[in-house]
Amino acid sequence: MTIIIKKPTLADLSQWTALWRSYLAFYESEHLASEISALLWQRIHSHKSSINCLLAHDPKNNKLVGFVHFLNHSDTWKNNDVCYLEDLFVTHDARGKGAGAMLIKAVHQQAIENEWDKVYWHTKHDNKQARVLYDKLTGGTDGFISYRLAIKE
Image (cartoon, rainbow, N blue to C red; front, side):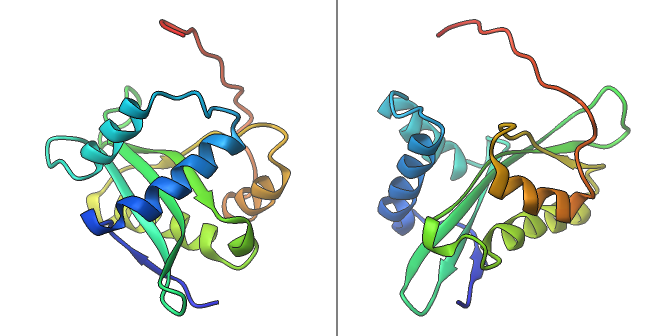
């Protein structure tokens, strides 16, 4: 499978939406309001938003097989911004074929080009297939455990 990493265009909306819905289903979050998904798509294309997106495209089939959403922000421990890789998804058929690694490496390259000090992300502890890739790319978890306080449900 040949994969090309590209920036999204407005023409990618329907394929991105299908991937986004599959991602939400994976995380059992299908209840996310459609307005939030529409807002995310708008933010991806807005120069005022720090949210970025890259897509994994299979040119042979002219299909999107994955995406990554990421954003840079200030950090209390660093001089430069850091990058939070918030969402990463690859279709079932494309898993294990390099698309996920290519998306992460593309975000890492963006961080280098923008002089961000690090790229970081979270995943569920039982996301075993993804964690194999993450451990391979990073050398393993940093040992931190995530907690959250919800403001709204």
